[in-house]
Length: 464
Image 1: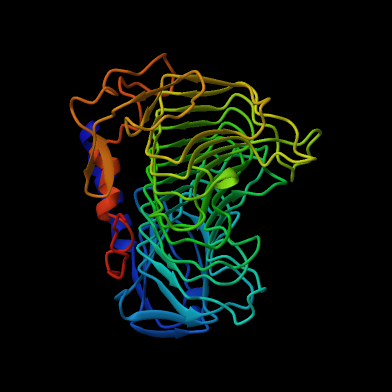
Image 2: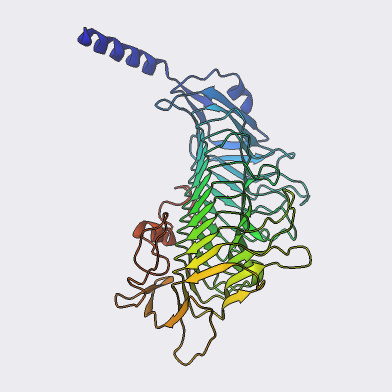
């Protein structure tokens, strides 16, 4: 009986495999005529695809997704008013190159509300901008659930709207954004130029569970917020922020984690680090170097909030934990109560700043709001022995014995930061003070496995 069932299963599998088809198409109209089934592949023929609004529909399976790809990513160019909608389940889009065009206002790549377990990979959107800078759209819009954007390249967005947006609904979306290269984006001289935004003010108290990990943000200068988190329970980890003017901002929402990120500002004006607003955030094991921002753009900025805030307001910081970060050659390491003014008067409450390493920074701690309720513990400051600085309790001056390893500074084996970690935290397990980055996290400095395989014009990283 078991043997018969096995044979039957094999026959069904082989029959199914036989029905999977490859379709070579030359237009969006041809794609619209297809009824796609699990395992099918759609190949876009080489050439320039002018003004093609592709709608990719179908329902694949986890083992047999439906794939739409370029015949050759270097020879298929989506230009003019081209765009694509990804509308279904277990759909994969790969090898597309949108370049030197502009839509009529629709998003260039749209994961629809019905999309789930879909993927955009090995693709690019470069200089896809309207002539009117105020016309707003995004390069990628993520609706639906459990969709992924990975190994893509985005560059040169000049019009209003974030480069990539995650849109929320009443249920968490669990999207993943990883191993992408976000290249230069110029300052738009106003609000609405984020590289990534997760959520909106209206939906900011809903859970997203989006992961943004192992991406490079190089010279992303669109506005103050490079990554703007406007929702709850997201993870921003193991990314590289290189010469990007602005900050990774926890703008709205609660319970977000920021860890394993590397910031290299190279002393460029207004380069910033991590800005904290809201409740129960955890910021740990980040490395920040050469940042010139102060106040709202300090290496780590913890803001004052508004009484009786609306969803669009700055909410009071409560129960934030800032642990085991390394801050090197920054103008201001910590700004607490940043943004305090006549309206923003609620100081941070129950903030823990512990086991951080600060080296050669002009200003270690600025208490913008003296009423900030902060516990400092086990923080170490590496300064020249002849320098006399006043520090709050919970900071100790040492010779950290740091040496430069390619782009960043790391402790020698005999450094006093070794084994100096104080206290226990549920989300971190280490013995040393400061950021402890493993080889996998450091590999991003070498561009390993970042962006599409067919694009080579990436910035050569340096440390000034």
